[in-house]
Amino acid sequence: MLTLRESIIEAEKNGVAIGHFNISNLEGAWAVARAAKALGVPVIIGVSEGERDFIGTSQARAIVTSIRDELDHPIFLNADHTYSVDRVKEAIDLGFDSVIFDGVKLSFEENMKLTKECVDYARSKNREVIVEAELGYIGQSSKILDEIPEGVSLDSETLTSPEQAKEFVKETGIDLFAPAVGNIHGMLKGGVDPRLDIARIASIRESAGVPLVLHGGSGNSKEDFLKAIESGVTIVHINTELRVTFRDALRKELQENPDEVAPYKFMKPSLIAMQKFVEGKLSLFNKK
Image (cartoon, rainbow, N blue to C red; front, side):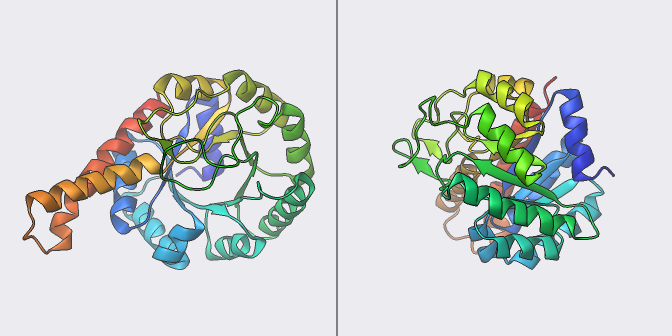
């Protein structure tokens, strides 16, 4: 079975992307894993700080590891959006495959300093851990939005520049880089987000020298996804759309069967709906 690093290299070589889907419960984990297994492609399951607090950090690791072993398939676990070095270290120590230090609200210098600390800690371990960091604020909430998140600017002067990316990667030694290229966390009502700056993605990939990660993929168009992957994005994050899929399927089931009290029965349609959704995204990301 390929490692996460090997899977990333393989994806970039083949001009495809690995899907990254956040989960908050066991149903979500099975939906993502079964979708990846059905299509024969690797996948990353992400758990943010809030999601880890709900599931349990060590429990999330145990769930994903046991599913990976049972399915015998490359299903990886990422500590998504981690805001402190201590919590990055916690995920590394517990055996997560990758971690993301999110220092976008910090100064450029402080973000680099703390990211470098995370990288050094990961490298000190006797196993491979992928470290990712971000540059450029794109919001923080995975929810349906009435408007562009407060504090997010899509002006070309404020998005991540190739020069910033080059310096950041060189000084920190990260494995993956997540820039602000017109993407936003969450999803605008109506389901259509702003267009991605494809030319900027290509320039950043060339200057950064490491694979790129697109955060906030919910709401982006198929065309933008394919162009972004072609231009250097190797991992795509989806959260809000998957949450909406779960909620809508659960609400429909409870409305149609209000007397059902067995969770394994009224939650099953949500699992099926999420798996179908993930299969659709993975098929798109792996389109050659």
